[in-house]
Image 1 (cartoon, rainbow, N blue to C red):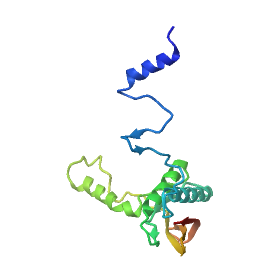
Image 2: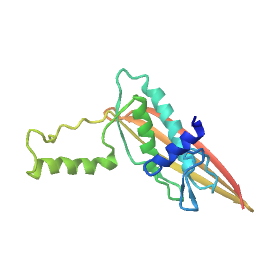
Image 3: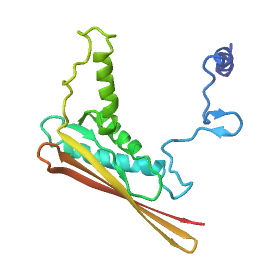
Image 4: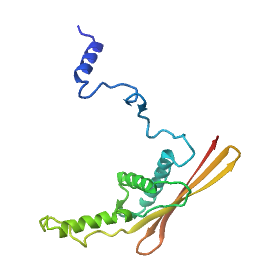
Length: 199
């Protein structure tokens, strides 16, 4: 009788060209690249990194979802660019994209085209309606976009202190949600992060 181990090895050998064999270790590329856990805590430097992005996005999405639970219907929201007031480059759109993705998955909010994406939306409408390439009955009509009821925007700031070989970085990420028609603030929250390193 064939042993289970032998059958598994034969199966791996047969299907290796298509799928490869499952192993418990991370996949590798070449000899010096290895996949890691995207959720693992990043400790390479004390500059803004992936762990900070994930921490901020999860905190803000959770707070926004709790606030949206008080609405009778799902609010229609657009996101403005978050202002980077730090001294380093931070892709703030990546933060708001992650917040939006988590909120859409939770089903607590609907999102209109963001302010930074509006030009692409306009270009697509013009292309469909003015190029002459499409049946008029199938084109998306100009003037039919649904206006957002609320706008989310905010900023990220930092304070950097150095003493000898110690570097301390403090980040504060602030978001607010404004009622577009009334101009009133409906929600606001902040997330603070402090990172200290020694040379």
